[in-house]
Length: 152
Image (cartoon, rainbow, N blue to C red; front, side, top):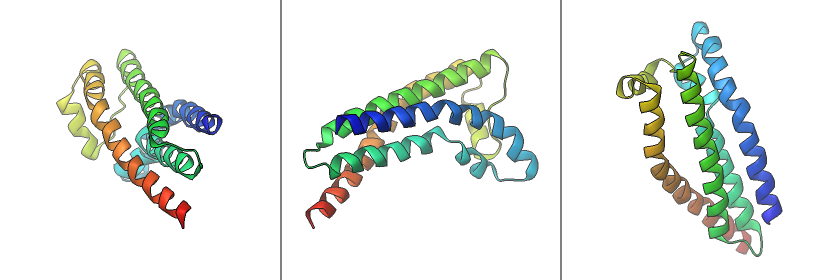
């Protein structure tokens, strides 16, 4: 199972880079066409990518006869760490080059709460543990459902 989890984390982790780039580029494409900010933001969301990775990691581990929740939890935490690192680096790079990466609508509150890239990046650092704990809780549900299906 470790090779399968390594492959999943590597693929999802590698996908994070183009998704982060697409998120920035798509902002300029979707907003002028009247596409709602929520949809535009979700089309290239690293959080959605992490959620997909969480489902894959925990379901793969649960389907394995020798699979363990803690193994899936470690792989998920590794993936979450990488994705959060990508987010923070992108925030800081965008700030360094003066790029506006905030989507309009609900996300404008982030701009007001954290007006500098450094404050925004630090908010992501502070929010990392709750995000991982939520992912682990959701992963436990996925793991439990998959395990029950394996027994029947």
